[in-house]
Image 1 (tube, helix red, strand yellow):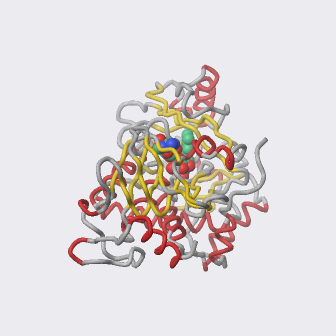
Image 2 (cartoon, protein in one colour):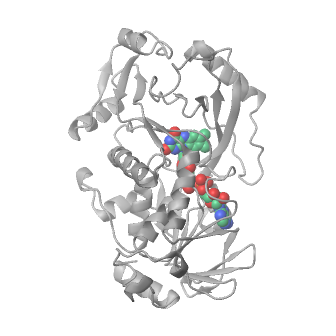
Image 3 (cartoon, protein in one colour):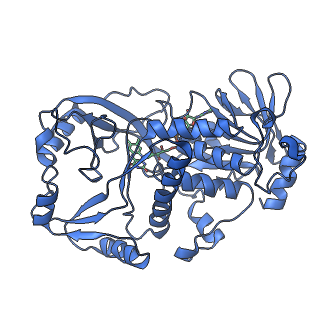
Length: 426
Ligand SMILES: Cc1cc2nc3c(=O)[nH]c(=O)nc-3n(C[C@H](O)[C@H](O)[C@H](O)COP(=O)(O)OP(=O)(O)OC[C@H]3O[C@@H](n4cnc5c(N)ncnc54)[C@H](O)[C@@H]3O)c2cc1C
């Protein structure tokens, strides 16, 4: 949908956009943000907005905020609340890194996100990003590792290649896996706080006049190839010109006809490990993000990652570790972080990852509805790039193609990467 068509569509559904005392503003022109009282229109329990964003995980939250900042009236709808415990976005910790092999757009988006996190921290007055560096252990210069280093060079992103004995000297608390390993360290990596982020972004959205609605949303009435409403579990109806479904692992449940087999939804977890009293070696800024283990922030404990295991149903599975997963945690601590091997597991943040067939995020129009966007497929890495995703999706949704000139990607080439692919997991 192009921008002119988007403006026409929202105008058709939401009527004119009355924005504060400034009279009438072209919806997509952008720089006036309406007061909360005028950010939605409707009578009784029904709501009419320019854009309804369903799902308040990291993708939906940031998208709704960006759309609102463009001056659109926006409703953000979630069945449990922003960053809730059933979603993929909750908890104490997520990693930030720029190491994406030869995947240039991911690396550049992560770099841009680092800057965005800092800008937003200053704006929200909330600490979200703890920049303590990212450390990847490598055993050889594979084609992928060489391509990655070439991208760092190309874009002037600082890094260090650290010999084995220097690694042991600098971070003895997290020794390399073997004497053959060296380190690829980049200072822009670090750790993010999902708990503080989810709250801060949703709060900013509301303070800027966005409307947050609690309820399970289902696609409602259609007119031709367009969706007109979503119906909430409360019975409330939300009408909009455009709908963004950023529903994470629930995409195949909401749109089974299109999304069946397109996501692999798997259980994963961060085990938060206690540290000895007074021992700050496993807290920021004293240890980088090592991928497998993330340094503690806010006294939450050292975050040890359990890689994805079983396929799960996000509505049903118990967010509890199995005995086997706990045994793996103990083994990993003993072999990789020996100073923590006898420390208690303080709590376990279990949630699901939703992989797309090619590991790319999905930002695409529903093939049968020209005003419905499918947003998801975070594939293990969407949290860190949340602010950039929000900006990108908001532009796409309002009809603007956004390329990445630094990677020589035009708008349509970048969009092609995020298309819903024909392949399935089945
Ligand atoms: C253990 C683990 C570790 C990870 N580590 C990292 C990391 O280090 N770095 C990184 O960048 N990423 C990481 N990720 C990935 C990242 O957290 C996810 O990709 C991201 O959180 C996905 O966000 P989302 O908004 O797409 O989905 P979600 O967070 O699941 O949000 C979807 C929302 O939609 C709502 N919803 C669903 N259906 C409906 C409906 N019908 N009506 C209303 N609401 C609905 C849900 O309640 C939910 O809140 C990790 C993921 C896991 C599980």
